[in-house]
Length: 223
Image (tube, rainbow, N blue to C red; front, side, top):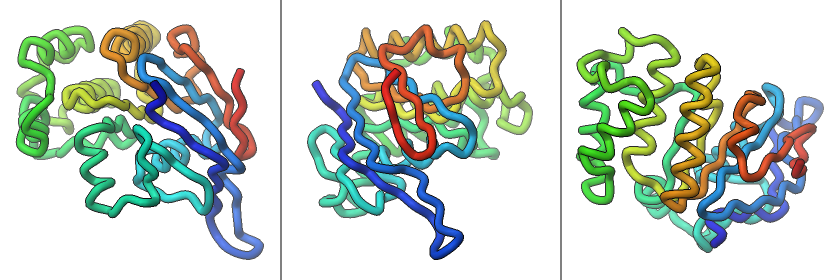
């Protein structure tokens, strides 16, 4: 089943001589149960594409369908609700609250999304898989970049979203941790029937992907 569908999406920034076209007629679809990898160098528009898919930005033209719903026809409140219940984001900035320890980051999710999150046993397994089960009492400022990255990934997966959108989720990780995250994302897609999209320049993730794409000069092509 198709969870995400883009048709002829275009996006540019700036005006006149400073206008830069980031996405050109991008068409793309992602099915439940599959891990999709979008590769491209820094500045190629990967993050822009991901935020458009997640409804954080709007395209200049084109159609974005999430679970058959046209994002352009939804109100800001409806898009917020969709992100709360259906879409999990793993962003480069981590977006962890500095005044909450790791355990409280998950309790915050419980307060915002009261139903459908992972069970305590499932969360415990996830934290162990990511090697962060001993960090529950620590604050983001006390953790390394790689540890914060894994906490942010766990927090996104804890909400048990149907769609997972990850922006460079392995940028701060060594090769062994990359394998752990790659296997975890592939398993989340295949076993739990989720649509997972990862944008990255990390070629180490290719072996885990069902489909791989390249984003260059604003154009997306399948490998």
